[in-house]
Length: 350
Ligand code: SF4
Image (cartoon, rainbow, N blue to C red; front, side, top):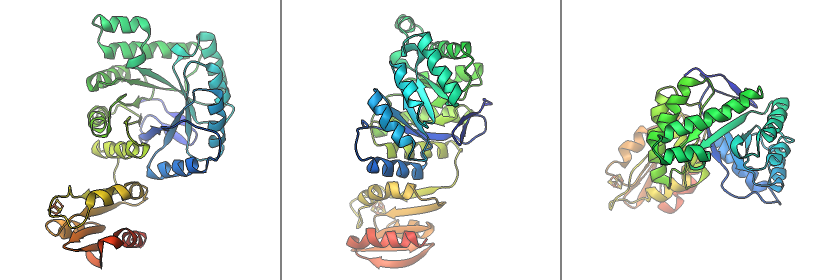
């Protein structure tokens, strides 16, 4: 779907630009040494996270986010509710974008102040409408039969009209519901009526499996119709898994080729090698590789050697031993205990 393009630092969102995957920091930001946080942000970037959002509930958090924004290259987004002064303070730092909901920021004059500063600093804003926090009148209409998707669209259009009133054009819109059908319908309707880039997501999607399943259905449906410019898979799970899920949804939608493909067996009573444990330990590392490769992680001789042979790098149990393949050839026969260390060596040589 043709949309206008919004520049978020070096990233372009909208129109035919690549779909950007994002996630949200899951912990409170507290003062002190930021080394671990910076390291984690670097890992998320290597895994494919293009934008990272932080909740900023108070001015103290704005200071910490500001420090991070001055340190890392990842574009950081400040998510602000209720207090426009927090948004103003965040914009004193090189943050990439803010997310506000004009409906709860304290009135039009406060919104105007935020928009003025954002405009002067070329900081785009996401208008985030959520089915769980609709304006009171729309919620009442939903309670008496209005389709939730129509309420989401109307809420978004109200917010957009405020931005337009103040001449602010650098915005992205999201309309999120926990229902798949509502999410799809709201975004379809809105994309017909506007050229604003859309951030897609199913809100409160649930724990890992339920969340990935519902997000995959909703997002894949929309993305295949050309709707959506940036995505977040919201999970009651890790940021890393949100990024991996986002990548796999883009792959399933035909919007991302290449990268690391992991072929791993489900494990059964025959296994000589614990594919579950190994895959979990290596997941973030493998998804951080900037390579177009297939990695096979297999449990036993039934399917292991064949799958491992067809991969760029494969590891499989065979009886008491573990074999490592590279490009179809067995390069090491090792014990289970040495699997991680030797696999790392072989991966580095790939
Ligand atoms: S490869 Fe072996 S361990 Fe893995 S599922 Fe197949 S039979 Fe079971």
